[in-house]
Amino acid sequence: MSIPSRAISPAAVPQSTDNVDVPAADTRVGLPGAKSQKQGHFCVWHGLTFGNWVRFLASRPPIHWSNLLRLASISVVSILNSWNGVLESLIYGGRIARQKIEHPPIFILGHWRSGTTLLHNLMTLDSQFTYPNLYQVMYPETFLLTERIVTRLTAWVIPKTRPMDNLPTGWSLPQEDEMALLILTLISPYLMLGHQGAPEKYGRFFDLKELTTDERRRWQNAFQTFVKKITLRTNKPIVLKSPSHTFRIPILLEMFPDAKFIYIYRDPYAVFSSGMHLRKTLFRENGLGLPNFNGMEQEVLDVYSNCINTYEQTKHLIPAGNLHELKFEDLEADPLGQMHQVYEALSLPGWEKVEPTIRNELPAMNEYRKNAFNLDEETMRRVYTRWRSSFKTYGYDSRLPALEGGSD
Image (spheres, rainbow, N blue to C red):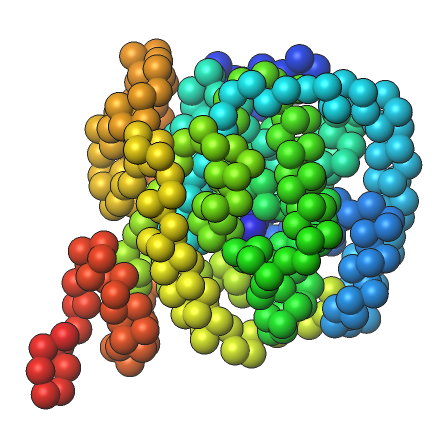
């Protein structure tokens, strides 16, 4: 859901057929002591083509005069995106249509702020895999044509760290594919960034069950094409990370029956605190109107419950041997041990090759400091009361005094 991701060492970068520039050596897991930076006028909507920009405006998102420069720049860039999209289709259209998806993808699942980014970062240290990067998810219509040139010219546009924490950013760094689906189809829960406080505009785009036949076809075609383009760029198994996919196991298996899945979960209190911070930050950084936090806490509570329930009700559809679950706190405490278990559980080859690379990242992981949040007892009770089943399912204590009239 966020614009940026993390920095990587060049030895760990899956090399593309177009030799897109990658950053110099750097840590993948955090910049100790760094401060989060604002995005400025650049935002997710700059990836839209002119047609989708007009469609988005037709949905009547709230707009405020303070964002006029952002609106103007999106309009100009959308025209360029459309023109480049036509050129890319002319040059690459036949190759994209003929491209086979030879390697089943690996999907990283988990609710937002459950550790999916850390897991994605560690998985993509392995050069046998590839991944969609920030530029590719921001410009999914044109990256085959434009990535090599534009990333060189616009590196200064991207803040060095994410607006919600101090993780590094850069065009070539891994990013979640949900951004590409938003830009390609406008069928995504990330429409919330433009329709803040209006879940009726995007609520049905989490699990996709209520899509019309045409919407479902457009979403699947867009996703299939995007995966083909990533494969055309680098023909390796793709590691895809999107918390939204946690709702979508049935449709993902329909499209990729041999896909493998890794599910990560985390202390619900930490998920709640970090999730509230994430939404507030991204609403400020990507909105076209004034930030609207009305009903945010209730929606965070609702989405988490629906996400966990949907996952637990559908995970049995994944064939045996194609799903591995892990706990964020265990991954944070023992990255090597937990990643080894991932490779063994999913029968992934090459652990002996990637293990030294992950080991080299451990000092940076130990230095990285997450945002710290403190919940008051009243908020903890609201969270625990609503998410009690998840606390029990995943083995987390309430850390609350005994409830009146009985234990917690």
